[in-house]
Image 1 (spheres, rainbow, N blue to C red):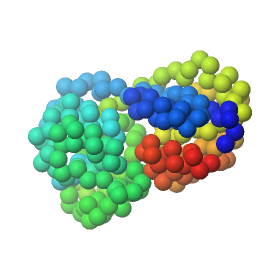
Image 2: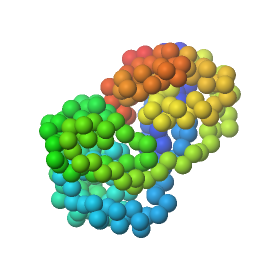
Image 3: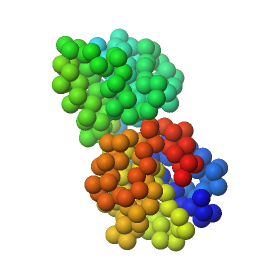
Image 4: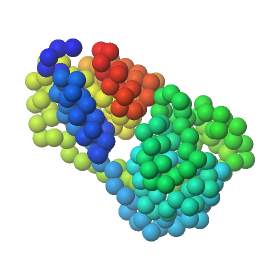
Length: 247
């Protein structure tokens, strides 16, 4: 890759800081460009009550690191540990176990909604009660598919995305970079980045490589005009960085 390669990181903090450090170790220039940050729910007491009423369930799906942290903060571990807990990948599982959650499973490969839905524990779910803990708008595909499979699905928003400003020099650095790559953490992250950038900078993002977790996100990004989507096959740092190194 050319020496002056700018890598836009759309993951939120604190995970973005670790990813930026690893990008720097590859000799590339990281720039954190998350269009939103993650915050606790506006009314934690009400959400905690909803969780206490809904739990236990047959399956609890925790969609991200932040979903794990907020769920444990809101309701503790006792009720959650009465269910089979499904998370996207090994990193999320490690955080769950560190916080005291047991019986945690995840797909062997690819931390995507599609990979989670392909797990045996989420295929034969007719009549099961499944609780999805996520942010508003996140992983809606999962609930839709599980309902079609006959599950009784409840979704509770345990955290929220709050819009944040991009770095003031983001557009200038994008224009000055010899080469540009964007690590698109999610559909929402890609959308938010393109909406917040000035038109010329957004157009350059669309014309340069965009690494995304899954085919679904790649197809969505392509509809938004992104012409060089690269499917990483998962959302973990390791998988995204592996795709970056292959460019």
